[in-house]
Amino acid sequence: MIRKIFIFFLAIIFLYICLLVYRFLPLYLAGRNEPKHFSGSPCQTGEDCPPR
Image (cartoon, rainbow, N blue to C red; front, top):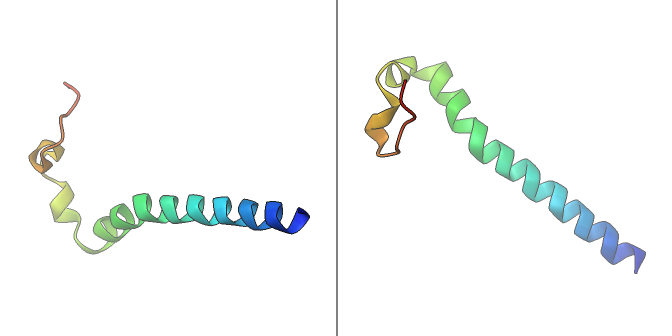
């Protein structure tokens, strides 16, 4: 019983780390390698932007 709870807890931590990597790795790589992509407006990706 304790082992199942421990494995479940590890799985949640692993998924959380994967989610963080999935969200921040593209920003980190794009900011490092090609910053010219982020100099344009962020609205061109199809997402709605907050008014400035």
